[in-house]
Image (cartoon, rainbow, N blue to C red):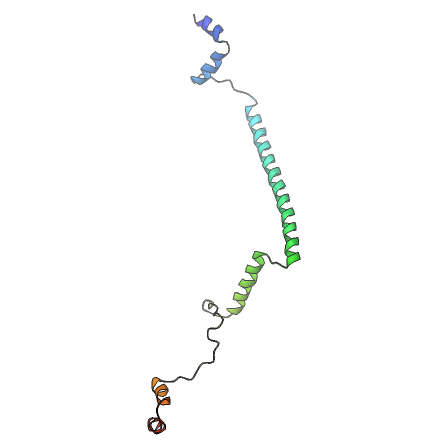
Length: 134
């Protein structure tokens, strides 16, 4: 009966044996094939990276042409200039750099310190002013 079953199933008995945890046929070149496959994957990845690096270089050339045409600076250049200016301002300082003062703040000439009494005296009549000034 077993023989008839094997004939009926043909080569499927080998596959069933593998599924049931039976002996698997070892491919003598399996390690070599796997190594070749891994090498092919690495090579394809390197080619892909080279392709995209070339495309990005072409884009950068185009971007630089636009920057030159319109006088635009790269973001990195602007940040580097701002950083250099901050370092130049804080050179020799032991504390952190001060924040920039907004325009209009502190530009007016400072008035002499007047006390409240002096401002009230201005509005008094002449003889009273003389009394307080003494």
